[in-house]
Image 1 (cartoon, rainbow, N blue to C red):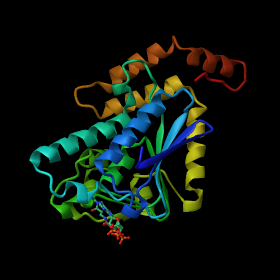
Image 2: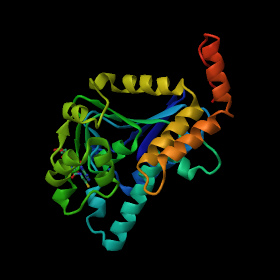
Image 3: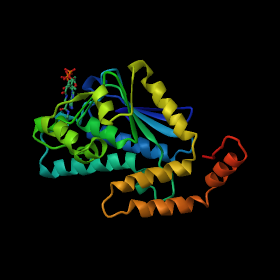
Amino acid sequence: MTNITTEITEGILTITINRESKMNALNIETLQEIKQAVIEGNENPEVVGMILTGAGTKAFAAGADISEFANFNVEKGTQMSADGHDVMNTIEDGHMHQWDGTKTKFVVAAVNGYALGGGCELAMACHMRIASSNAKFGQPEVNLGVPPGYGGTQRLIQLIGKGRALEMLLTGDAIDAQTALNYGLVTKVVDQAELLTVCREVVKKVASKSPSAVHKILKCVSDFYRPNVNGMQREIYEFGSAFSTEDFSEGTDAFLNKRKAEFKR
Ligand code: COA
C-alpha cells in the first residue's frame, strides 16, 4: 500500500490517507487501497473497529484526484464512478461483500480538515463522522462540470435533508465544522489535537457492545435506504435470529445477574 498507512492499536485499525502534499486527494489507487484495508479490517478478528483519517492537519481528503480524471472519456468516467461506489458501499455495508458471515465493523471518519468532493463522500460512507474544528465539508464538483460520482447526491440527502443538500450541491460552497454539526453531518466537533483520541473512545465504546448486535444494526439501518428492501421486515428477522446468538445469552445473563456483559469477538 503506497497511498495509505494502516496501524492497529488496542484492536483499532486506523487507516490514514497519506498524500499530504496533494491534500490527500483520492486517486483510484488510493481508493482501492482503502477498500482493501477495510475488507482486511472486517476479516481480522484482532480488529474491533476502524478509524479513517487523512495525514497532516489540513485535509481529510480534498476530493477525487482531478489530475487523474481530467482526460477521462465517458467510459472511463462511468467506470470511475462505479468503482468509487463499490468502495463506499464496502465501507458502509461490508456484509454485502461478506457471504462467509464476517461481521461488518464500525468505521468512524476522523475528519481532520478539508473533506471535499470524494473526500466528503468518503466521510459520508463511514458510519459516523467526528470533525476537528478546522474541518470543511463540500461538494464542489459543480465547479468542474460534473455531479458528485461517489454517492454524494444520495448520502448527503440522507444525512442533512434535501434542501440543505441541494444548496451545497448546487452552489458548491463548503460549510465549516460547526455548520456541519448543526446540519447533523457530523456528531461532534473537537480540537484537532483531540480528534483521534475522541474517535478512539467512540470506537472502543461501540466495540464493548455486542458485535453481533452492532452488525445487525448496521444492516438494518442500511436497509432503510435500499430500494425494494423492507427494513421493518429485516429488523424482525435480525431481532428474532439474535435469540440464537451467544451475545444474546451473555447480554441478558449479565443484566439479570447485575454484572457487565463480556462479549466474545
Ligand atoms: N485533486 C488533485 N490535486 C489536488 C486536489 C484534488 N482534488 N486538491 C488539492 N490538490 C493539490 C493541488 O493541486 C496542489 O498541488 P501542487 O502543490 O502540486 O500544485 C496541492 O494539492 C495543494 O493544494 P492547494 O490548492 O495549493 O492548497 P490550498 O490550501 O490553496 O487549497 C483546497 C486547498 C482543498 C481548497 C484546494 O486544493 C481545492 O479546492 N482542491 C480541489 C477541491 C475539489 O474541487 N474537489 C473535488 C474534486 S472532484
